Amino acid sequence: MLTPPPTPTLPPDTRTRILDLAEELLLERGFNAFSYQHLAKELGVKPAAIHYHYPSKDDLGTAIVARQLRRLRKWRDLPRVADLPPAAQFEALLAVYDTHLGHERRVCLFGALAADFRTLPAPMQAELRTFNRELTEWLAQVLAVGRATGTLRFVGSPAAKAAQVLTTLAGALQVARVHDETPFQVIVGQLRLELLP
Image 1 (cartoon, one colour):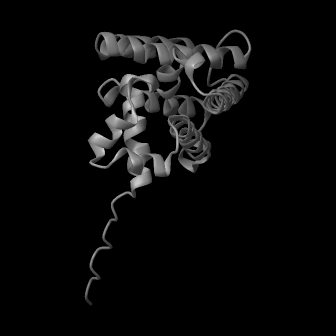
Image 2 (cartoon, one colour; image 1 turned 180 degrees about the vertical axis):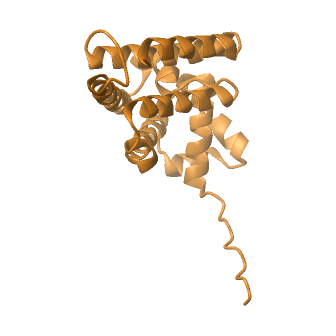
Image 3 (cartoon, one colour; image 1 turned 60 degrees about the vertical axis):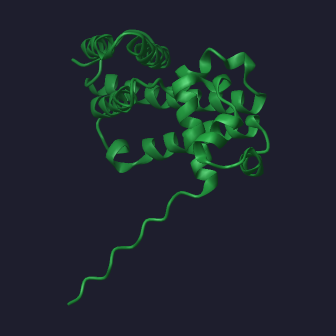
């Protein structure tokens, strides 16, 4: 029997390429440190092509955060995450942050945008708040179930511990950017010592 030829992989469309590059620049430099000129030059298109897909940088920034929010929702609902016991879900979260570290010590979305939050457009601020709230609520639920089943330990409310863990991870990525990955690994190791019995 003949094997059918592989299905060709289509290159991403222009809109996706713009969004991908803008996200990369946002995580590397910050939202206020790149322009449509940077994007156009890197993509080999005219700035008008970018404006066609994203009329303003506000639209582009909001689209980046909205896409990250969709990714978060998809990730947390994946059976390989949702069906795990709490301690393994916590480890899955740590793996996400470790992935950021592996991408040239890139910071997370929240870490990249928090310092510039007051300069961000209102719709982008709203999306970032939703992203942060949903991630915090998810982790708080994981922590609550983990404590109830004896697989995670901590003092205080699950919501407060979730906020502490997430800000610690965001900060650890920032420190790794300044130094190397060693402080990040030390900080993550400390989180494991505090949370895992």
